[in-house]
Amino acid sequence: MKKYLQSYHAFFPRSYMKWIIYLVYPASMFALFFGGQLLFDMMVLMLMMPTVMLAVECMIDMFVFSGFAAKGNAGRMEYMMASAKGRGMVNRALAVDWIRRLLYLLVLAAVVYVASLAKQGGELDEMLIKLFFCVLTSAAFLMSVALWIIRVIDNRAVQYGVMYMLLSLPAWVIMLLTKQFEMDMKWICLVFIVLFVISVAGQIWFLMKKVKEGYYDA
Amino acid sequence: MMNIESILTMRNLKKKFKGFALDIPELIIPKGFSTALIGENGAGKSTLFHLISGTRLDYTGEIDYFQGEKDEKKIRELIGYTSTSGYFMPNWSISQVGNVGALLFDNFDEERYQALLQELAVKEPEGKNKKEKRISKLSDGMRMKVMLASVFARDTRMLLLDEPASPLDPLMRDKLCAMIREYIHQGAGEKSAFFSTHNIADMENVTDYAIIMEKGQVVEQGFVEELKEKYVAVKGESGDAEKASRILFSFQQNSFGFEGICLAKELDKLAGMDVATEVPTLSQISVAVMKHYTSLQS
Image (tube, rainbow over all chains, first blue to last red; front, side, top):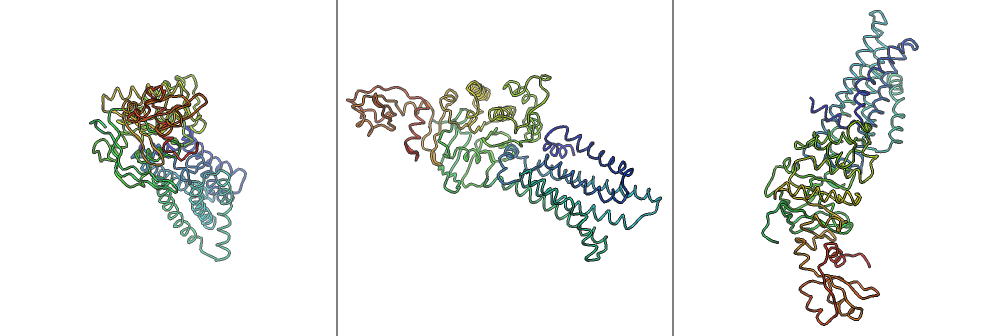
């Protein structure tokens, strides 16, 4: 486990990034959710949180893995490529990064679910919860797509552009799917979960392939 | 070549790019010595270093490391490679290079790395300057010093340094030569250094063996002392210039006369001319050989 975390932390630009990712970021999310209840309706917060998380994850990734698999960036990987352990280190870092993100998504889902239950006095607003999970799963899928792009394009303007474009999508996707196709939101969640898993697995496979290609023509 | 053990033996090594081909039928790097790889830009020096370091794998041919070592992990552990490209992730700090080095290489000594950073004036002693620059904010010279610290902090058997002197100031080049000499000396015949350079004069005092490349091929190689016996520096009067130009290996005329490099075995042909001879420097030999094979128009 230590080796996995060390590999992940190797990509952090500064040691304080650990504090930001493991403390400041989750604490801010909690503060936003619980503090926000003083200002906003619970429903607004529930639908806003996954979108905020999508934005924060994109911002963090711009500092951690930004453009590392971009074309022409193999040179900056040479120190790792010269070692027999280099590829394993990249693989471990990518895996830990997704495990960390998945954990955060699960914690967010649990906190919001429990908080909404408490707010309704033990009675579940099923529609609202379903809507929340739809937004959360779609945000998770869009997050995986956004990070994929951020990691293969080494251009900050494009990276921000991708992030802004994707930010409004979760809400639009849900509205479109429920209005036009009258789909059950349970199925929408399931579709997004499947897409998310495929996208994350595909991303790790693709990025490792790019790293491997660095050993062949630059 | 004398009967000397090799640290690296390459056979039928071929690598093609668009408009360039590296083609080396056989090349032996002697063990226990410091070898310089010399050649003009685009001669194939960095390509050869990429193949040896294992950072490029798309080639044909055979590279025999450390007289038959086959374990890839062990080979990579024993080679200390620095390159001319980015090398490190640009957002890493100098200390982070040490942390990552310890993860990547079993033989990485973090304490030695920190000591080398101070020795090379990359980092001030503890407490003086806590804020560290990112790799991307370092000058080329400073980045090379960090690369050198990361390589010398490991217990390797061979240094593979791609143009280490180019971004360094004269003082640091002198220091680099001393570090390479010390490395070879400590190895007691077991450690070798193989570096490419354009700064032949600065690196000559640490060069035991020289390899000159042109257009992807090795055109000359040998121990420096042997090369200095093979070639002779010649200076003469203008009157003999035309005749001498047909004999000399490399020839240059100026308003006072001519000078050039002559193969020692051809020296007899200069008999009757008013010429002065002297032992050439490695730089003179290298330039002469490169001029002989280059497609660069004079």
